[in-house]
Length: 479
Image 1 (tube, rainbow, N blue to C red):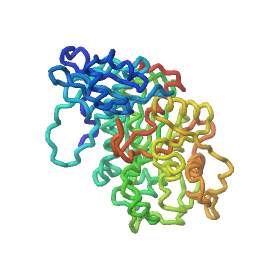
Image 2 (image 1 turned 90 degrees about the vertical axis):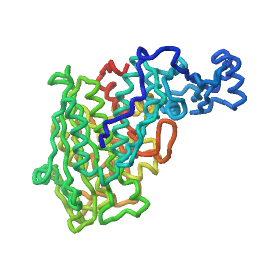
Image 3 (image 1 turned 120 degrees about the horizontal axis):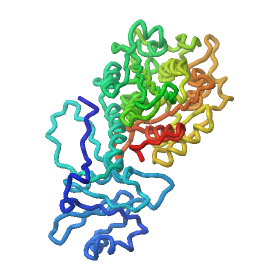
Image 4 (image 1 turned 180 degrees about the vertical axis):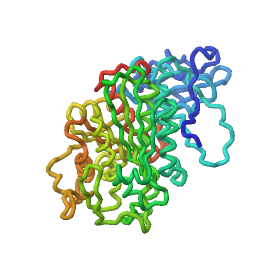
């Protein structure tokens, strides 16, 4: 299986004849009175009789005089503060095969339409299942701005496919191989650290992974843009790649284990973001570190009350083997800080507490820099990929105390679990490094327009847009 393969759902405007192209009219509820002028009296009358109310994601096919379907209506929300590309994801499954052009209100960007259309056209890979050739599909006619959105969609869909891959097909080595396949052809220097070197350089990653027959590894990748100088911003990305999480000896109940193939979602999202940065050749220096590991139960697995020494020299008592993600990340963050990055971002499916606080659609954001946090939150709202800041509340640091080590990997209190996990990670980040931690869900619990049930790249677009603003980068492909 090649998770880089994606269905081509776009077609350039120069490659089609206008007479062969259908038209989708995008309608807000406030625009219903002008429907006659938009589609003609007969079609407007048909729409009213069919009950078209321009509800969010509502699609209605309009028959022409000869009965052929050459136009359609799509309902979207009234004007909002930020973008909403996902609503256009309702189109691929609703339109007849062939090329289609979307006519939207002037405040809707062409890239937003193309992105949502591509996300809605995503299909989960057919993991060994007999599959017929792809059926003819609806395709969106796009200009240059629309085509530029395809790289974003493909990277988001890469993250989705990695997360959706069954855990027997996505172990630590498989994730490392996927990283090499995604980045090396774009000029990245990719190395995979294993064995004795891993034990020496990333001891907590090794400690988490010792319980599995599938050995852990760390992916390190370095790249610089074609116009990036030696003093260009250094962006460092870190991802939690726990390919399956049983919880270890603190075993998860079966219902909680069903979706634990997604516990490498942070690594998938950071890998996809790195590929996007490379595809768009941003003028930055880039480093990526992924902790690829499986948290299993065996005679070799870590135990509650173990004490492990981290790369930073701090010792950690294992209060709970199911709090393994922060152990995977702490050595990676310390390694990243040794390079003094201008921006350090990590993503992880880290805590259930973040989901209790914010639900599945809004990742929690933590940062040691107020201005950076504000830029991330504002960027996420503007592009329809929301993040919500939670505090690195100093009063809770003492909850991570241990009588036998420098710290425990879990809190002594049954509260503020997302905050205490972030406070644990903060111990391994230099105070002068601008750091953002994203506690994401990485999953859609049910299907909605543009967001099929399964793996999701929550936080990817927000991070990308924030990075452009922080370093004042003009993304020519994006704009």
